[in-house]
Image 1 (cartoon, rainbow, N blue to C red):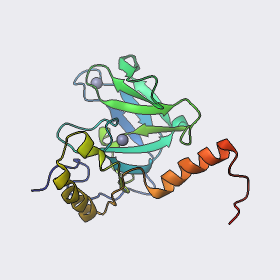
Image 2 (cartoon, rainbow, N blue to C red):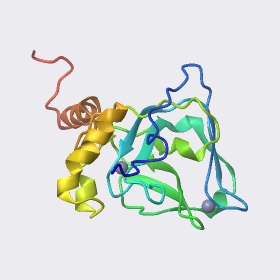
Image 3 (spheres, rainbow, N blue to C red):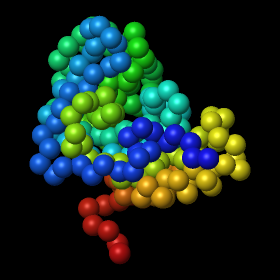
Image 4 (cartoon, rainbow, N blue to C red):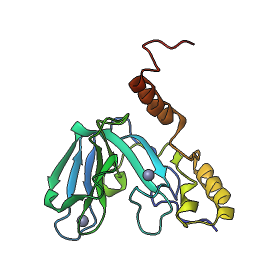
Length: 194
Ligand SMILES: [Zn+2]
Ligand SMILES: [Zn+2]
């Protein structure tokens, strides 16, 4: 019996549009929703099974992407936003009434500093980049969302949609994080030895 992975991917992937110019994210409040405008398409959109990303009720995964922070602006009811955990590397700005995460921002020195994390399902516009892979899949076992024996079925379901399962981020993103760390520690000089 297939479970709901996420409403955006359960019915298959809807390809994004290459000339899409962005849209507006809205939280779930019936009145005075928080609105966040994105001035462009997102990058590295993916399904995420981690315990930190906001996911809609009944979904096993969140769908989360990044976009340069200078393309993100709060356009309505920003007074309702609060940072969930100020000590976390990603400062997730959530609506204090409905709990929806509008954007996650990195202020500390980090490989992804300058990129905000966003959920495109909060927008009515169509054309956002489709999810590219599934990250932190084993985390859904750790959170008690699926039994260990059912995890292979979830991975199969993801594969059927066209999403490769990883238990961290995708290899290119993990390489980017490792490269950042190696440069910071001085272990990676300008030129590779290979
Ligand atoms: Zn809200
Ligand atoms: Zn996540």
